[in-house]
Length: 410
Image 1: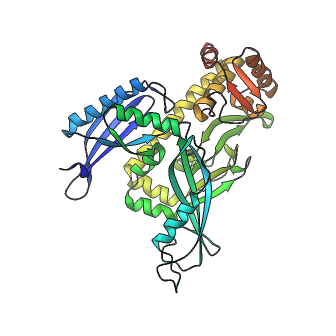
Image 2 (image 1 turned 90 degrees about the horizontal axis):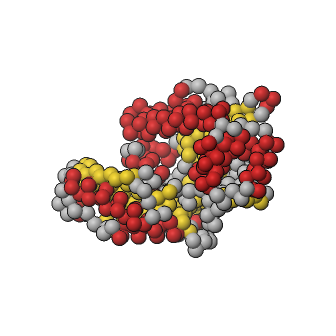
């Protein structure tokens, strides 16, 4: 069997590296013939911090997969993720040349040209283009078109979401794989790969007509407590907080999420109303997938069901650990843990110090279960102790180890 029918996936994570080898059988069905895993110690939050440790883990995982499958591999599709992943919205416009110039029927070349036009945005030198996701098309001011092929028009527009990653982050990941003796066939966003892996080709095609994408302004509600679920909500890009209102209208932030996070799915699968509210922290792009489609997938696709169960289980574990922290730790311990949580969730700007989230003192207080005045006072105490630096809503983490020690002491 030639290497042309081999498909190799490599997932390099913070805790483990996993390699999977698949082979196409005579019926064109991909069969998994080899799996290899190895503990990972060279990454932190998806970013390579130790090249030697990472390449050793990659080598061990791939060698284990080769031994199981009995095949020798040379290249792999490699997943990339982490806090350095970012996304922007863009739009492209072209005149339709069409399959037939007289009828102006939109062809594949027109669609290709409009997507290329949408990609013609200024991307910084330190960013690498990963993926361009078409959201919808516009034909002569007719909006909401999912597939314009064979339609008749003069003007074709495309609204897309462009996903980028850190250039150095990607280069270091590729370097680790190359030095381990293999070649990266291409990089693929881990969250997209996970979603695509649990959907059949029919489900991927069907979802195109079952998904609505909407842009939300900063501080706009996505849903409120006691609302009925309107769909399966995916945050494509942006930042969102989920919170409950307590005594006297005081908020308690129970979860914060970023791009490619899922919102409100507990209520969807429990068949209940939302028990919390969700509001954007910045301009965000939201996909709302029809509930009938989701229920159909959950009932018929075991991989999709397992993915949801795992997300619910992880959220339950997070909630349990946060309950202990917010009820038993002192003010300094709670605030230190919140700063660590924000750094892990959103990562840092290019300087490696500034949190990639501009957050108000009130939101920090609501996340840490304390009054705003206590949050302000403790933040300035941390600043005086040189653990953080504050510039308006910007916070720099100067001494992460000290914050972790305070959080552990409680």
